[in-house]
Length: 493
Image (cartoon, rainbow, N blue to C red; front, side, top):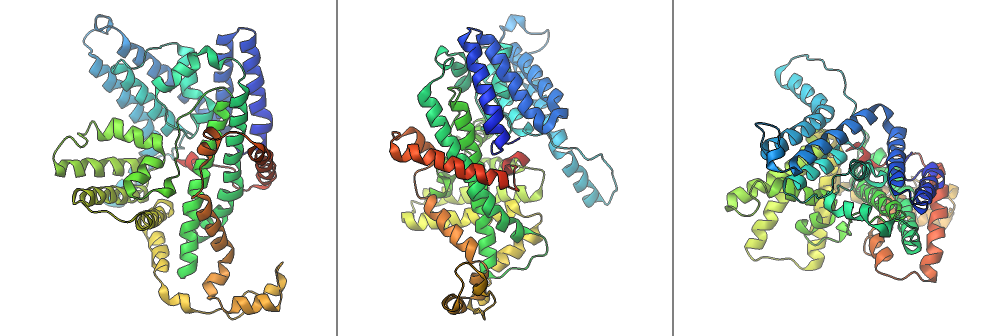
């Protein structure tokens, strides 16, 4: 059951919504929170019921460690300092994450490097473990710094399991959420929040099932092993994945914000039109913003950040981005992708320190092209697969191969002699990739407009938006029934 599944938004979400506010109306506030925890565990169990005990162990362990970190020094276990307790908590969390996410990767690389034949039972990655592990590590650090002030187990369990963010983020801070869960303002239905929530949910649903899933067809076909590429097919493949990933993940985040708003909870913004970025630093301030914030606060700054010499600064940036790439999955392709972005950030720093700049249109084009090219490594299964697509992207000779009626348009909806003659004047590669090319052009227009959050929070709801909401929802409902790609891409990370 995903956010884009009719079972979720037609059955599960309304039941959770009405039961929660019914309990609140009966002044059973604690029961309402317990209900949300149970409903969230049911939502998680629909994906991975075998790993519910792991999730509950993680919640219980981190809650106990957090309370110990918040206790006065004279209440600490004998011989343990708060720093030691924090270390135990973080190491345990990372050990669990490392076992489930990186064991297979480590064993495969040892066998490859040493020529051994070590065998290890294939470990299945629990859904959402990266997100709820990072969320709870942030909680432990906040406790250590005396930034987390509330320690009710029900509230903490709700903070971790709240279903809109449980599976694929955003990565939350305890201090930004608990004040909302505790507020009496959130206990009754707020009709404006319901309208805004349904509106941004409809936009996210449309992004996922109408746009991302359409691009997925071309991206999957293009990245399949052994497929050869010319100039046009290589570019439509790379750009299809670039837009699939964006509309898939930003669509999920829009739906997460919308679902949470129904319960009067504002989740942090995770995307802010990243493909409008004018440089690579601007891109990372807009893309997966909660992960960028997390890596900055809990990795880059502790390493020394920009408070050290130039060489150490560049080292800190590279380590942060390489580990950020590895966070996405146990693969050398993710490490390469992270290293490429780390190198680009370093070059951007050098460029800025030299007092250089680019005109905005040129800066946008360079940034977008770099991001598009590096997504090839992010998506490809191997370096050979990535290079095969990159070689096609610079295969300029194939541009001049003209179509010789390879696509008989008489069989198409707009078919006929005129269409045949028009297509015969186009390169063969462009003719064969006409549909994704037109879709890419539409996507480029869409990303220049206001994003879903701006449309929802910064403008009034007039007739146009009121009409747009049910229109988007109905189109998406039809597409979600037909969809063959029910899983969001970031569920894999």
